[in-house]
Length: 114
Image (cartoon, rainbow, N blue to C red; front, top):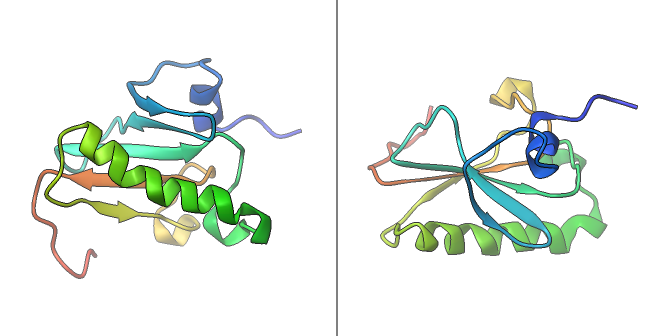
């Protein structure tokens, strides 16, 4: 069995995090190295390594994450727009191999993102 990821440890309350939202399927907490005034990570509670490993049976969970992201942004007072980022694999910048969406808001974002 592999070592639990950092996010699995947060979900299990083994390590602290600034949790801003939680329901039965997912958890959202503030990023420890924020890249915007709002930088929250939204993670499913089930371990799914990365988006490219999702299967058809994960569709409802993925939809739930996408529908929850704007709810979290609104809950934290960001109603004028936000950016969602999903890094898939180390070449894309993924450092914790547990699927997570970055919810970023509170500043203007450039395109392309870099």
